[in-house]
Length: 71
Image (cartoon, rainbow, N blue to C red):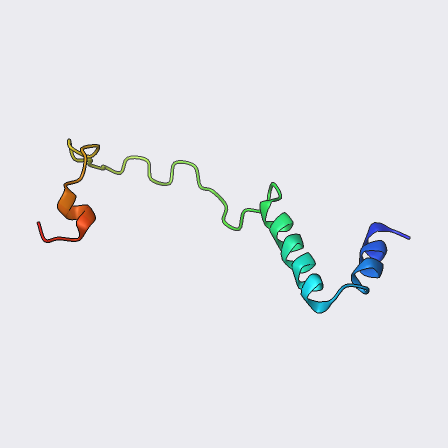
């Protein structure tokens, strides 16, 4: 008996809720497996594009921002 058959044999004895958990976990493992990127990266795609960042980018935000009040 191979691993796939052994898994199927075990899953047959689980409740539908437990089977869903197994399915969700298998999907999670498949997603985090290396080499499963859905989009291929393109080196240098944005090379040469100008960007700008404000001088006060790291400055603390005023209390009005956090309190939802108009500035």
